[in-house]
Each structure stands twice: as structure tokens, then as C-alpha cells.
Image (tube, rainbow, N blue to C red; front, side, top):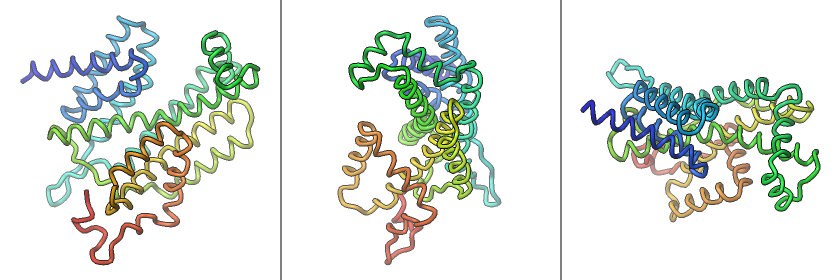
Length: 311
């Protein structure tokens, strides 16, 4: 049994490294780490992450291994640890860390990472300007941007650098949570999950989250330079949390729709190919505390928490 587990850890580390090195599949690099952690425990997840880091350092380079560990591996291990936290109630049932709290934990963790990257990596010119300079010094990237978007001036390069940074920071928590959720779904299907499947129909975010969102949006509008970019990145991260809430609401209110599977598939396809679709979904999550969209799913002949209304 121990040898089988070691083989799984080794294959997961190799898979994580291959996904990271393949570039196209880099967003799925945390998936093997999350799968090992959610099926065997946090200790095995840490061993897998360390093996993947060592492998990346030897085969690629130590700097890339550090980037891999900071951006994907360490946050995934921390997220798995939180996901496996539980407590036993008076009736002997285990209550695991709530999904809403997992989302807030991920947003906080990636927000701290964003602040540190802006302060450490930017230098005197700031991270957006440093990134724009790096784009200018890469002929292939510069020519591609000029041909596709007609971008050539320094001001336009700075604008695209800011847009790319904000998008990357907003995607960061979504990638981490998405890989953990995908790993959980696969493990539930194969009955290897340590954490039970959660019911996302009742997912909610605290009302106070609107306050930091308003502060960061105001900072993005009123400040200048890299502080404005940092504020925009932090606001985008919070909107990512509301995007997840919006998806949960759509899943809940479409429970009894005909052709629900096809409609959800179309929605996810549009999210991947047309980024602006994320905006109305996020606004739905943001406005849910005011309008309670999930009441559209309530049926007069049965209570909303009846067994028939669950997945």
C-alpha cells in the first residue's frame, strides 16, 4: 500500500511538472497536487509539491521552479489544507471548512501575493512599467501586439501591460479554486475524496466584501501609476469571487430548466472565448445580496431545501 501511494505521488509530481512545462496546459498544473491532497492528505500534497519543484529546478531552471512554487504549488497546498479542516459536532458529524470561506481565503492569499509582487518586483518604475519594458525588449511579442492590436507606442505598451497584469491577478484565484474543485469532482466520482461534495446552491459571500471592493475600485479610478494598477488588480480579484457566486446562482436557478446541461455548456464556452461574459455573471453575484436571485428557483409545491431541489 505504501509503495502504491509513493508511485501515485511520483506520478502526480511528474504530471504537475509536465503540465507546467507544456505552457498551453500550465493552468492545470496544480490539479495533480490538489488531487493527491484531497485524496490522501496534506502531508502527501506537500511531498508532491516539493518533488515537482525539485524536478522543475533540475530540468528547467531554479528561477522557474521558484515561480512555479510561489504561483501554483504553495497556494494549492495551503488551499488543500484549508479544505480538509473539519470539526465534529454533537451528533458526530464532521463539518468541513465552508466553500464561501475557502473563496475568501483564496482571495486573501492571492491578494497578499499581488501586493508583495508589486512592491518587490517592480523596482523604482513599478511592476506595470517593468512589464511593459520587458514586452518592448521581446521582438516576437512586440511584433505580435503591433500586428494584432496595432500597439506600438510606449503609452500603449504600458496600457496593455496593465491590462495583462490585472487579468492575470484576477485569474490567479480562479485557477487555484478551479483546479481544487475539478480534483474534488473527479475524486467524488471515483469515491476517493476525503472531503464530501459541497452544495453550491446556498453559496453566499459576506456583505462586508462590498466595502473593500469599493475602496479598491476608487483607488483604481483616483490614483495614478502602479498604485492604481494594484488597486485595479485587487478589485478584480474580489470580482472574481463574485463571478464564482454568480455561477453558483446560475446553477441554482436553472435547476428545473429544460435543456439545462446544454445552456450551462454554452455559458462556460462563452466564458472561455468571450471574456466580457464574465462581467454580467460577476454583477449577478454582486447584486445577489440585494435581489436574492435564487428565489426564482423556489417552487410553491415544496420548500427550497427539500431533497428534490438538491443535486
